[in-house]
Length: 368
Image (cartoon, rainbow, N blue to C red):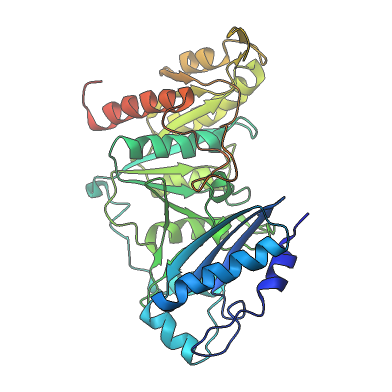
């Protein structure tokens, strides 16, 4: 089985024709993801003449190693990058990029203003393991399918998962003035702590540092014009949830639960926090509500029934949807592969589209 280290080693001899330096050393080959015999990576090229030759060389080397599915994202090197490469300058680390972006400190101060016109929606749950992040990414994509301009912040800083769930293989770029540009995928602009932590390292921070990072995601990122900003919150009612309530008093909330009575009982705490801080609850989404038998189509209620409806009744809100237990049938060899985003033509994507229409109607005051 291929490993990331083997891929790095085999590609190490590739050099930039203008400087003679290793492309790996210049970090021009990066975002390497290896799963069994599938390899994904991004390559930055300095000239169109180099592009085709470089891609062909990489494919040849990887195929010789036994890679069967190779996905290469080719990106042009901007003029600043060309100058740095020619001077042998090392690309700044991800943490240095983050620090540089924080120094700018004046990008999106208006984003949090109530006059910005952006609808903030926090996706919350009482406990982990209920599919909150899956709901967040698919709802963001569904809103984008409705023609909305959507941003998504992976605010679950300890348990970030959005980049992997959406199949994002590249990190954000940083402009000369320190502005961090979010990564766009499926029409959604995404920012996550996962972009700045390599090799799945744990984040060991205290509460105040988490709040500063979240503030930076608002202040130092070039989001551009947005209609909706979704925030995938950590489970429970901890520091980040409290920071969101304080930073964005106009934010609305969606509570995710499973039909199990205990999960709904715990989720009620997240809802109670929203009510106590005077944040509108848009509704409840019951995930893993049933398992549709692939043979007969009958619904099997694996985790019980009624938890989502009972929670919605407790919180005096609407049960927005009941989603089946399952995962997208996406193949790693597909160019737009993502482990957790449902394709537009699937039944689950249709359910998310219906939720997106309901959410837009609630937020924008339009009829469904």
